[in-house]
Length: 322
Image (spheres, rainbow, N blue to C red):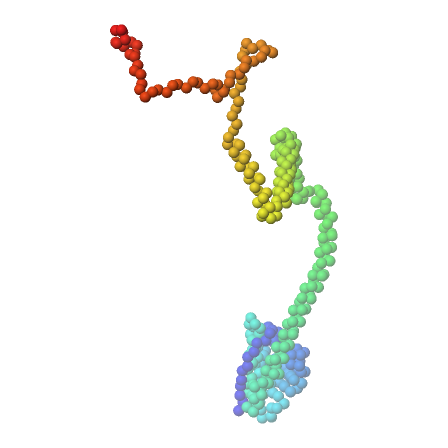
């Protein structure tokens, strides 16, 4: 009893490309790798796989459906033709192909198992993939050729327009030139004002600059001198601790003596007054001897054990009565 099965696959091409390749003899032969004779007309006879398959077109809907009658050399006289229906639908990933094979003799099961996959689907995918790469390459080559053809024409147009542009530029200065002129005018005014300004009003006079330079030089000279003095003193220091201690003793003694001398300043001598009446050339009177050189006063007699009574004081009542 005849049977029917359905197969679905995705082709890397559009529905239009698959439809046209299926009904074209050359494309069908390249697609399957075996001679084929196809037609795009209804009721036209067809053959594929070098005569192994034969039939005719039953229904054709451009870019959507192909209905053909198929029979192979394995069909007997009692077997009717099988019907192959190919439906095509465009998707984002390519053309969705749905194949329905009906009225197939029940003893011929190889079509459903691997016949269609091995003889049509795999070689068709390879064919459209290679064709797509070739199409991309041809499009790239065509674009490159168009650019190459366009370049000389654009150069010729530019060369043709060059004299007119130069003439227009000479008669009417460009915005860039006008901008430069506008910028140059304020610069000239600023330069004139700077020239008319007194020298003392300037930011820094030459005298100030020279003074600053001298100060910098003197500062660097002092720094060099201090560095050299420090290095010299460092070299003059004794290397051993004993030698440094022996060198420090006299210095310490001198410092102590200097502090003692500073703490007790010497007594100032009293100035000698010269009498005004003394004439020039006359001998000055002898200086008075200091108190220490004078004769010591006579010592008073020591009182005895009993003191003498004193008389009445003058002015008292007793004194007056006498």
